[in-house]
Structure formats: C-alpha cells, structure tokens
Amino acid sequence: MEVVNFPATQNVTGQVNVANLPLDVNGNLRVTAAGPRTFRFVGVTTQRFQGNGGRAAMTAACAAQYPGARMAFADEYSNTGSPPPVAESAWIQPRPVFIANPYGNQSGMRAFDAAGNAFIINSYTSDCQSWQSQVFAEYGGVITPAGAIGSFNCDAILAVACAAPE
Image (cartoon, rainbow, N blue to C red; front, side, top):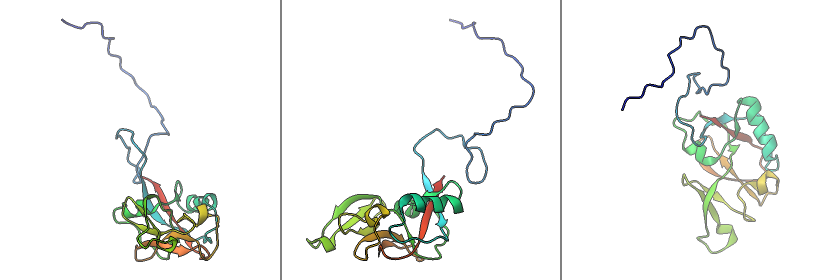
C-alpha cells in the first residue's frame, strides 16, 4: 500500500523570533525531553539570616543574588559536580527520607536525606521549625566551607545556600 495524501512541501522564508526557548547555563539550546526539574548549587548569599528568617525571604535573597535561584536543598549540593566554593557556613534545607533514633531519646534523633547527609532533629524538625525559629535549642541544616552538611543552632546568623535550575 502506498500513502499519497501528504500535503505538498512549501518553502518558508523570513525570520522568526522566539524568546522562550529553554537554554542551559551557557546559553545553548536545550533539546532534551521534558522531565523533572533538577537544580544545582550555585553559591551562598551575602545577606545573612537567623533561623527564623523565613523560607520566602531566604529564597528572595537567593533570587536577588543569583537570578532564577532559590534556597538550596542539601542533596542538591551533594549532587552538584564541582560545586563553587562555600566561603562561609550557610543555611541549607534538609529533604529527609528517613529518621533514625540510635540512642533511644530525642537528643539522638537524626534525619537523613537521599544523599546520606545527616541532620540533628529537635522538636521533630531539622529546619528551624520551617525557618521560623531562632531558639538556641532548635536546629537547622547548614553547609560549611569544607563542604560538610550538618546542623547549627537556629540562633546563628548565616548566609543562605542557593540552587538554580540546570
């Protein structure tokens, strides 16, 4: 069987301006199939916050310093190949996948993310009560200049780790 009902080929001339094509960080056109958005660590803010700084304000600080960025998750730092250096400790969001209590008491509780990063949990949170607490005894996720992921007391005044779409 022969198919013969194709439309005739037509020549098109002129220019087309398209401003919303997906580009990578180098300005090259991305032509991969759509999938889940992935983020990479891009740096830390110069603006500093206590643990009660609020996720929206911390994300706004990231976006102001790194256009398109938001507050980073620890696993995004761990999964970024050759991340930029971290000049100072910074708040970073945990994305726990399981919780362990090896010592059988609340002070021994740890949350772990998919990359194996561990966070101290107090009051069943490891993000300064959703970035609303500045209490010394509460904990929030941090990244250190050595690239270690851990926890600090929420009364600390720190920069914010930022991630941008790949």
